[in-house]
Length: 577
Image (cartoon, rainbow, N blue to C red):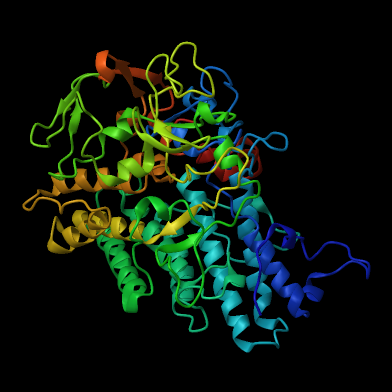
């Protein structure tokens, strides 16, 4: 029997019904109620995507983008975050608001709720009355284990190690006895849950029935384990650079790739840009074999267009404006070389040009990695449908999509760029988008493996194979041979920023790499200046100077209410808070 994790199916099975109050024992003596409780465990998964306050992406809180509400709606997510608004008593990612403002949920509370519900489910599933299909009980148990692992991973990425709770509490439990373990201990717990799910013969590797959309498959366990061990090996949580942690991370991702790609069960999509504009299809022979887990529709998908479009189409805001730093990371297609190797000044206004790349400052958008054109709208790019008209974007002064630096507004770009990724340009404001948030997809596992194996063994052939597989999908040349370990590390980090752009990875990557102070002080843009004969010159400028780059912003503070409830949190509050 299938479980449909839809918004209308999230009613707590312990709610009062016309037959009276349901007890926990009643839930697990009824097959449908048992399934309903598993739905409850799923219901704490955030919507991610543009599900943050004022319909925002998280990317505006990283060096990937400037949120267009900066300077005119300063109470929205990114402006509050970037001035250092995070405190133990206030988390901008948990800003609440009224209907239509894109608010999802306070993730700290949601993740703990999910862990609690998973523990309750796991404590009762073995004795549950599942008679329709005997394999369902085993599968449900595996799903709850994965959900618990998922919530713990998302929790510790933000807040660091948390108390390991593997059972439901009695009403008399003393929460003051809880203590914080090390990061390794929590990751071991996550890995144990994932391994249990992977070993479960009743859990499918991937979903093949559309009615099961939203459920976890065995592939999700591989993805969670891969990411958890990569974070555990990264500098933030591996200060001694323990090679064993990198080896464990590499082994997990290598095993995942072998299991997922065997027999073509999973494979990279052929068209990078189109992949992100669509919902995955679920069947025995799907067109989309890249998606490992996709967040269900959040409702009102037209908001994606209305809150992330161009002024010519009368959107509410342009939303996520890609940064020059993101653009600079796209290699040249002909040579496969990065056009910009760094900056000679703190404000990023004087790029160090890689002369071997073939990059031309006077023609900066020609010949770039195809993923650039699938992610970013730039001056003179031909937009497919602007109210029925196909024409180039006019981002220069006086143009119909002109850059607005002073004073900024929420409709025009503040960086000289508009977001292309996820958005079908043929859709008008008010139309529903088909894009869904790919929480896990196969290219991430390739990049996880490349990073971990390079740190464990150096740039061996397997590292090249993994990263070049991702590049070839985008019609990019292979990386040059004979790179050093340090050079390969830099190329892998660039590849992650490009391949996973605007997918929330960059926000966490710069933290686990401990380079936040190098990336998040300043974000720049590019101003196109129109000359005679429709010619253009381009001038870099500082789009946003930021304050949330100090070491303490690598890990969120434990909320003040939790500190007062659990004394060990007070003694072990995160550094700097």
